[in-house]
Length: 366
Image 1: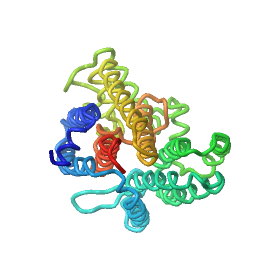
Image 2: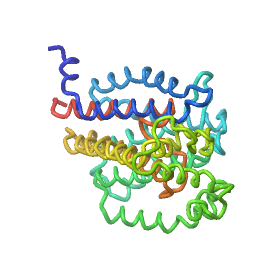
Image 3: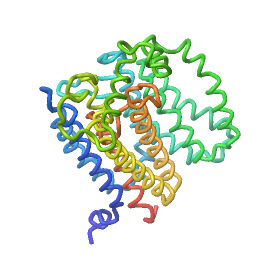
């Protein structure tokens, strides 16, 4: 049997079908959220999926250990993208985070985050003999530069994602727990200073709105209030597909971002508690599968990559769903595989390709 075909049959089929199922559900969700408007976001999403699926299969079938040679070039490319967005970026919703490429736009922070995971995995694997303090300083250099560049945009959501990803990879990479606890305590102590001195006015209003959305229901609290009304009105079984006079159809949910940031609000309104629970269970099963890949990984690099990607996807999922039900502040993070977004689809499918490669090559010779 040809090696490529043999590798294909080693695919983690549960991961593949969960990924495909959530992608299909995402196209349906985007259509459900935008069918009454002129722009066909769901067709654009299908085009992005069709473009990125070959990349997913190529990355899946190639040995993931190529990251030893490709991590640094990807990291440099990510840094160049972050510098480019500062110089030529397009400003949206208060943040200069996008590069306009004509028929498409790209968000370099997503590439930088994935490249940071690859680079950090290689460093943690190769630096186990170093003193913990020196390892932490080097890790600070690897993640600190892109983190600051993203903060300047400012893209607070992507900055938040870095924190649990890096801490989880440091834990798996052998950084002593006492150092991690100390870093966590220092970080928690700095939160009030960051909120008071480091946030833009609109970002600060997101925090205060999260704490008390009723204080300004017609202004900053509008989106979260309408999201809660939409999800609550869905009840146990939902109002159904294309139900008339919904919060979304009447325009109470924000039309510009309902197909990405507030996609869960639409699904909660249409499919109720049962639909929301089914989606959350699907994501929970997905994370269990990814963590099992981390456990079964053939080496430290595969384990670190799996953990980093798992925490990346989990944080996006938790923050996206959480902000629609007022559990977390509004951060603008998309729901993986479900929300609309070309560059995020590309990065997500690339990540899933890496996970498949780690699974396929877990027992093959190094």
